[in-house]
Image (tube, rainbow, N blue to C red; front, side, top):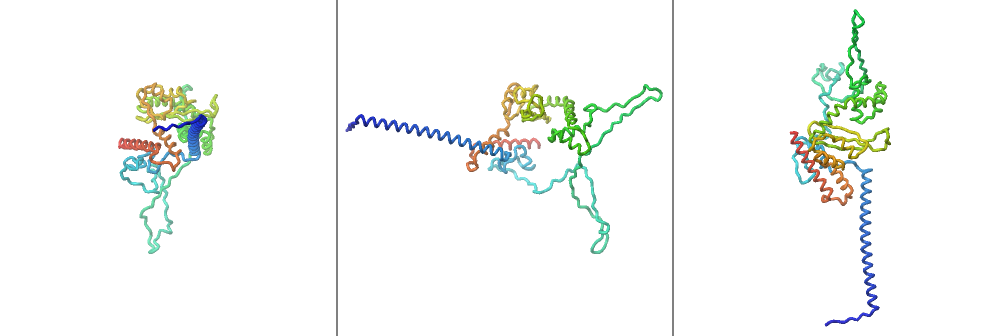
Length: 386
């Protein structure tokens, strides 16, 4: 049976006002919840950035994850020659047994190094037996070796060009021609130039420090002379560099990367301005490494390094955007570097607090998968070497 409820106007107005207030409170609550979620996300992001900055300033620079994971490029060395290349990225994967090197065992010195034998003998007064007085006879030697370093030794090569003359007239004079030099009338021999070049470009010793080092051994040569000699050597070897670049651009696989490079006293540029040094290396055939300097990092500057590259070649880079245009322009197969991709995942994993990390963390899972790729690559390289 229906029930009739009568509500007067005042009660209806009160009910509607309460309903509106209730809806307003709900809307305000929802707005506060949204604002709280936003503030919480911003706080978490700020904390993550703070951890990343602290780790960048004070943390370890190594990207190694655990002791059971091999390095990125030395899997075979870590496991040993008798082992199957690494599977340590996955704990459930078994690897072949291998012999471990004894810790603390000293590596023998190179047998090809020249050796100077120094005999240490007992004085004649002690070459008698303490029990019966008989003279002792030599039955062998106990040998130990030390590595000795002979400091740089300077010398002067004096070229004497013999003159010949006719004893009967004054018109038959001849002089032995001067030997060819990479720098005509240069002060340094080719061996000395190679020493300066390897010290600067291979071992990172500035020219002025090499000048100081030479001065310690009696070679008073200014750093300006050494610097000018390096420029002259670069110009003289440019034809060889051109041939190396031609062979590099004709390779099947090419690696390329760039890094910042500071140049002092460059005309029209401040010392704080970023310059770049580009490294190109063959991944197949004859190993070739070429370095090129540019005043910037733009696509136009990078394009000059690949002029003449063979179509269809493989180009491996770190994913810098101009490489995409170069690969499209020259019809190259563009591959990305897994080590660079892994680096970002390592940073992402490091930004997660240790208490919140687990094996199911997305960054951790990707790092393990990339580790499997490295292990497979090491296995294939080992098979190829065998």
